Amino acid sequence: MNATDTRAKMAALDVDALRAKYADERDRRLNPLEQAQYASVEGELGWVDADPYVDEPLVREPLDETVEVLVVGAGFGGLLAAAHLKKRGIEDLRVIDKASDFGGTWYWNRYPGAQCDVESYIYLPLLEEVGQFPTEKYAHRPEIFAHAQAIGKHFGLYEQAIFQTEITSMTWEEESLRWIVRTDRDDLIRARYVFTASGPLNRPKLPGIPGINNFQGKIFHTSRWDYEYTRGNHTGGMTGLADKRVAIVGTGATAIQAVPYLARDAAHLYVVQRTPSNVSRRGNQPTDPEWVGTLTPGWQQRRMDNFSRLSAGVPVEEDLVRDGWTEMFRDLYTAFGWAPEEGEEVTPDVMMDVIERTDYLAGEKMREWIASQVEDPETAEALKPWYGVLCKRPAFNDGYLPAFNRDNVSLVDTHGAGISEITTDSIVVDGVSHPVDCIIFATGFEVATSANRTAGADIRGVNGEQLTDHFADGPRTFHGFYVHGFPNLFLLGSGNNAVKGNFTDMLGEQAEHLAGVIVEAQAARGARIEATAEAEDAWRGTIREKTAEIRQVAANCTPGYFNSEGDVERSWAANTYGGFGGVPEFTELLGAWRDRKDLDGLTVSS
Ligand code: NDP
Image (cartoon, rainbow, N blue to C red):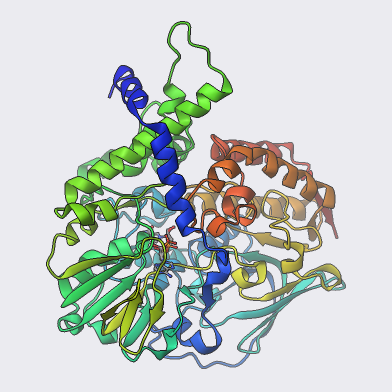
């Protein structure tokens, strides 16, 4: 579309009507309970969290040991932390995880159709180093899991990992300058440095639906798939469902990948929707070996940087990834390429209007796509999302929308209300019972509930202060990594820094940076590294400044985990280094900080 066409389309939008529609759809979904609407998978619901994938439960003696670095979490974050530490010569480390292997999210999420939704050539980290290449543009879960295992092997991490083990407490001991770490297997580990890489999406959550424990049929969460019941594997073939009525609850990124397989294999599938997702074209393809042959050293980081810049609205010469994500970002950032016509004055209000219209236009394009894929107009209408394109994670899948054209698939639209009750044999929506044999919850994960819950342990710093208390008003860190009062603790992830759409790229950047900080501090003979209170306060101020616009946008968004179900001040939107250009800006900021070599903001002592 050329600039004149875009202008004409933008001018033709009925902005008042769209604004009212978006606000109406959002208001209907706001739940005064916010996060409290979800049930923790513990106590009566503890069975939800159990690991169905362990072949042999581990039996071992408790450990009593001292290590230089403990890495909590064996997903890509933990793997990248360990890999970069080793590259910098730090060999004495332990990796710990409650799963029975490496992989993190790719260990747990084995649902049929599980596949990376960011291009695998940039999502699977360390491809050049490990010497692997994905077979598809969007690799499926077994291949991603195998890649995580390959990284583990490549860096000799299996010998240093303890699996099926959960940390229960971590306490800073000033005399020894060590973290005293205890686990549910009675291990005692004294670690000089601790990296937490437990991921933001590691605890499954269920909606707090009355009667959930009364259901007599089969119930499980997508991240704990019960293949014993369904039979089959990630490619489908779920013969166990051939005579079953199945309900999948939720229509987020997970459900969208699983639905095409369930639709094919179940006798009848009910897709229970609270809020529709933006679902666009995927276009997966096998990897072209000729193209692989043309790649030159360093290609992966260049491709990652290209995606990261483009997705932050920074102009790039060429879009290397060229997929649904980058097309969407190009659409959304039309506003930046938008040039005033002669005599037109560009005030901030004009710019806000352009940004708003750009978003509506991108939304219209997605809704048109949905209508073109679904035969029944009423179902197509119900599947259309009415909220800002980036309010929820956009999805890309070529099987989800056509699944609704099948006779054995019904959309149960709850119009924002969710399931009201579960009885012994049915789900109840808006007073109507739907008898089912199996309920699969694709209802996502706890995001940023509390620092202790995310890490899975009671973390206490100097003078016994709890990390959760330190974060009572939201995360308080320096650069998102270091916490005043919690020396030698490094938080990997997206809590209080810039969030890249390509998570593994972000984790790799952080891991490399932090490994460098430790080496730098050790060179200065400092074994104790702690953020100053001033640096932490200043960083909080920086984040508030950077998120002024994003907080406003998030407040108008339909509820979801991006805006903490409407509790915007606690959300990612309010606490990360966001805003247009945020991601590359944060990368530059870290680089400049590193180059100064003064570890400004940290106290390094021995
Ligand atoms: P989400 O949190 O994105 O989605 C949960 C779904 O459950 C939503 O549709 C939500 O509706 C619905 N829900 C919640 N409560 C109820 C209720 N009471 N009744 C009916 N529906 C309800 O979880 P996902 O597991 O889908 O995805 C989580 C994240 O994991 C993604 O955003 C993405 O970051 C990542 N992911 C990545 C993938 C990849 O890279 N391949 C694949 C899958 C996931 P509502 O929207 O109204 O809250």
